[in-house]
Structures are given as C-alpha cells and as structure tokens.
Length: 98
Image 1 (tube, rainbow, N blue to C red):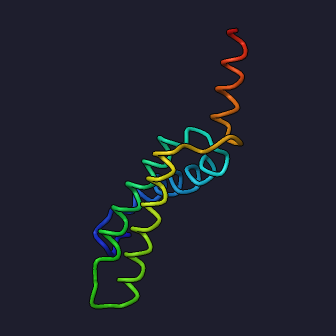
Image 2: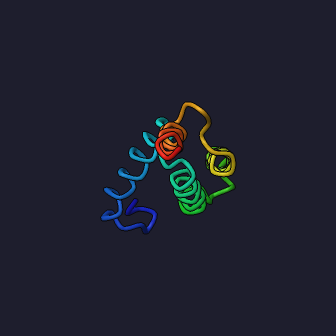
Image 3: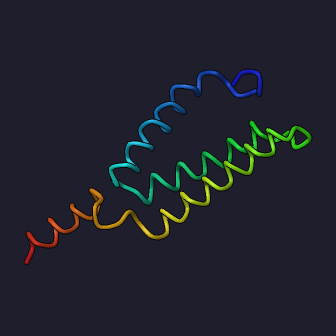
C-alpha cells in the first residue's frame, strides 16, 4: 500500500472491511449496507491500484474489480434472499407482533 501512496495505517481497516464484509455477505447480514461498502471499496481499489492500462494484467484486474463491484451493487439492489439472516430476522420480527 505504501508503494501506491496509500498509508499503511489503513491496512487494519482494509482487512476488517474485506474479511468482515465477506463474512457478512456469506451470512446475509446487513447485506445492503455491506455490499454497498464493499462495492465502493472495490471501485476505489480498482482506481488506485490497477490504473496502469498499458500493462494488460492491470487492465484485466481493473475490469475484474469493476465486475465484482457490479455484482455487489446488484446484491445491494435486490437483497440477499430467503436464506439470509436479514430475512430470518424480519420473519421473526413480523411473527412476534401479530
């Protein structure tokens, strides 16, 4: 990260976001917020780390990050589905107040 003029102090936050966000997506917890955060992070990472388009590998990595961000935005738009913790929590909440 230091080689790309990004402070190394951000590394723990990046690790927490990537690992914690990935686990939250797998579990389906706070999926809209987490997928928006991960999607925006992925777009920033693509712009900062993969901006040398003369190098074919960097271009491929940039396009991969854009595709991943698009998938995360779809997840944010449509939600996690019926097997997620968010869905289970809303079903328990709805059944307890009827």
